[in-house]
Image (cartoon, rainbow, N blue to C red; front, side, top):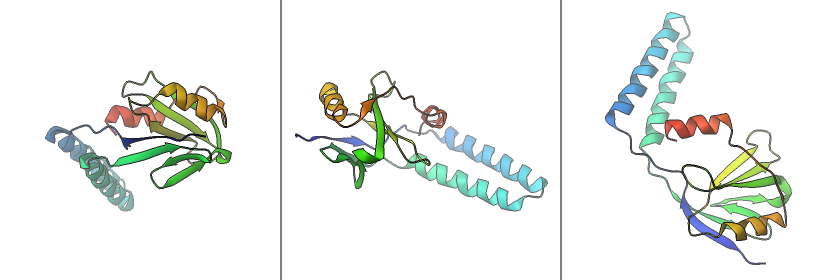
Length: 153
């Protein structure tokens, strides 16, 4: 059985303007001050730390990861998703930021795994290869995924 592999950025990078960071800071500060007014200092600290983490992540360039589909499962960088731990798959080629491979895992914490497919990869060979191990079902990205995509993450 042949292997299919490609390299891709882990996410689509969007350049942030200084206004974006100012907006994040103003919203975080307003929420933190409101939290202090209501007597919840711990939540205020969590908001500030969260905003700082979001700003760091937004300014970080994505790593280039290797995705490989083989006879055991789907390897994403150092993680291996075995076919026996996956329920089904879907290839969404109508996504505005490119073609996505969506895997439904049996995990309850992260049930959907979304992987970008490089433009040079033959989508039909990917579909046929995975179809030998998993059933093909229509999967939509979660609402959290849509929100993160709209926010540029």
